[in-house]
Image (tube, rainbow, N blue to C red; front, side, top):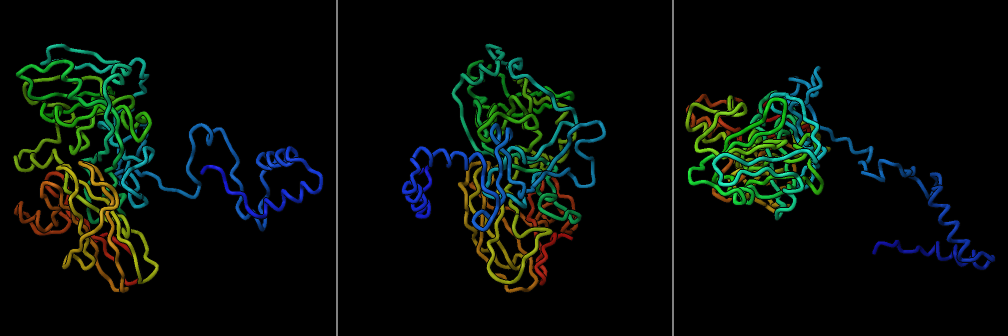
Length: 425
């Protein structure tokens, strides 16, 4: 019920007022005045009142006591915005996250080589699909919204989301990933409208930035699950996230998720683009690991720079995801990897989406190390750094640079005093 239950004291006050000669209309008038002029704090009103404002009415704002913010990434590197006012890489505060959805205002940001963020009027923006199609078409934003829509939850992760010994907390180690609910039209729907030629094998998605963001992907991905998204978490995309339209190729690294999408060219071979340069790998094995992400997980509580107040019960919690599909299981170790325990999945394990996991733990007050590992629906298991070192025949060091995308297990050390630090440090 929306209406508040009347308290016994209010009923008694009302009865006394009527007995004193006040009408019900007088009481209603006084109640309305009380809403317009809230009572000052006192024994019965111990909290200060939050008055209405234009900002609260039109869009809303979070409590002043909630202070989670994004940070430049990597810490100490190129600031964002820089001296030219350009946005670069900005990491989301995973250490304060709950559930599995990242608020749009806290979603991580990565730009195309620091180019300016375009200010696009959606009434003038168009998306052109051409190349090896029977019927090249140009769609307005209104056109795109006329097609059947889909709404799906997917993560995006930057290839630079790598953890090392210098990083202090989970925002620094893993903050270049976020998960949101995306709404739009399937790319396959638009391609069917255009009609694919038999020689169509690849497509290039291009954005409208100053330095054009573009990536080449196989046409099979386009016909599988790519979304041409214009909505995010129940509202239009925000400018930092590609307004008015972007492409979401689920499970692929962030560089493929072209923002400010303006053109898709269907081609018969792989096209080298500006974005692809520097993301290609000479070793075929490493190249195979540079497109699809995961499986991956990280404990967000307890994690680096956090403090446990003392021994006792805690719920270890974190996020897991995979570019290979849905997360099947997450395991947690509280003794440095000697024993592993099955964690509970607290949110639905959608395909290519973050899932929140949790494990009940009674800390005995001794120093230890906690870890998590993820297994996805196609059987891939998140590896230790030592395992990756064996695969690649490189020195067995816990802090070397992982070839391809870094999905290795992240350890957190817990000292006797409850202080939590980076396990690689």
